[in-house]
Image (tube, rainbow, N blue to C red; front, side, top):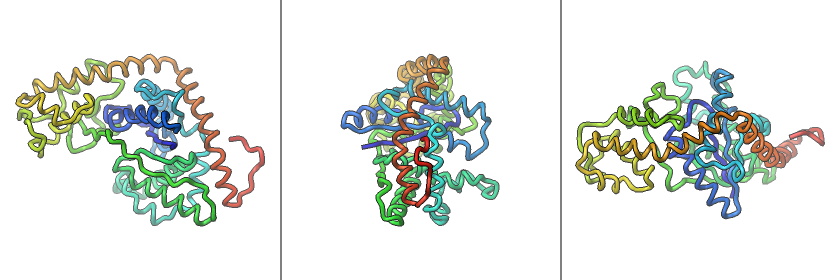
Length: 341
């Protein structure tokens, strides 16, 4: 079993990233490793450049995210942690797969429509072929499983289609066909300002999210100002229907406490948000406080962060080389025999 997952290097990692993905990355590091498998986690800086970024900010974000992941429990000695740009095989394989992917397949990708909006003609080619690079990310390592949420399921299906077609076109099993891995404990955390919108790094309001780098005072302030309503918490989960902000805050508490929303309501039924929010802030601080402290320590040592990423990239390049060689060979492309990877 080889699990691969990545996160784009734009903005700051936040509570939604932690509860929705990173917490499960740490768990998989233990469970998959115990079964003899391995986990690869990467920082998707090549994906980030499909839209304009300030170069210095992008470089800084890559290190910030590496620090946040390690602080949250991703162990560079037990998992392969790296950034895409240090593994050229990602970009090389993406170009090779562009000959297999079909325009019709890419035209059906809903994320391009959402991200380009009404300005499709002004969007970069990179944004359009973004899913092919995602396919390369996955296939280059013969990944068997990919943790996905509903918003990425379509891209994994495209990856499978590309792999199957490539294998069939050239009569070789060059690529492993990956399966979706749906963590049972993955949580969908919504914005603190809008309970119907997912918590996002790209939201212009910093008050919409709790960043992993936020200090104690900032966490308390954001929870205090989080959108809620005037009604008390009910004792029945069904009574939260039509109260998206209330449901979101209850879900956050439940996920942090490793319990159920029903158990949270049983504890706080009849209380208003004036009582619930301080309890939620205290729980957030107790969970995120150690992560923030470790993050701040790591972020002051750029050389060590770069060393962690370089170590992971060297492992990733070695894992990627055989698949890239097989793809070139299947296509009939001639390369130097001792080509550096």
